[in-house]
Amino acid sequence: MHTEVEFQVNPKTDCGKGSARQTRAGGQVPGIVYGHNLIPTMVSFEERELKKALSTPAGRNVFLRLKCDNPELNGARTLIKELQVHPLLRRFIHADFFKLDPDRAIHAMVPIRLMGASIGVKLGGIMQIAMRDMPVLCKPDDLPEAIEVQVAELKIGQSIHVSEIKQPEGVEFLASGKMAICAVISPSAEEEGTKKEGETTAAAGS
Image (tube, rainbow, N blue to C red):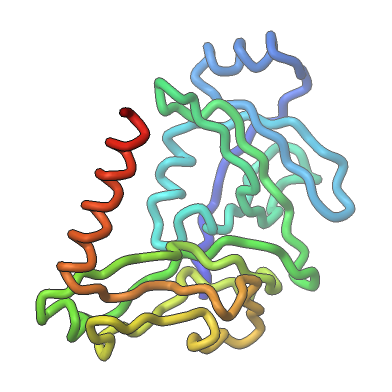
């Protein structure tokens, strides 16, 4: 079952930059809830509660079951669609919550989890990761917390592509099957790549 947590939000009637600043000054973060058959509604919430929710194994894909005095929002199951973070303070400054419809497919980015210890790495190879998240299309109840990729048999010089990974039931991968997920390269190849990068940088600076 996908991770779901209860999440308290408070109705917010004011909008605009001034109102958002006041909300943050009061220890809350402004946000908006929208989705199918729902009028976009302004809310506020506690940053620490969202950080706590995001610390679950599901990460950004955690389902948030809203608790709110507004009956239109209370009990709604949502997903974070956008999360704005202050570039210097690393504090949340705004969040978009999308109300889920169990019968409508959603787009999401699902973390890729490499499973096992690669033979190639054990022999001195270096694991290169080309994809860390998989774009998918699925109904909310089919959304996986991670896409597991077995790498135990991966040898030096070998790679794994999207086409080699079995799609979970009800889930469609949106990335091209030709895209590499990871590869094990020899240390000499890594050194050669670093050397060429250094030579290119030196040539550009001369």
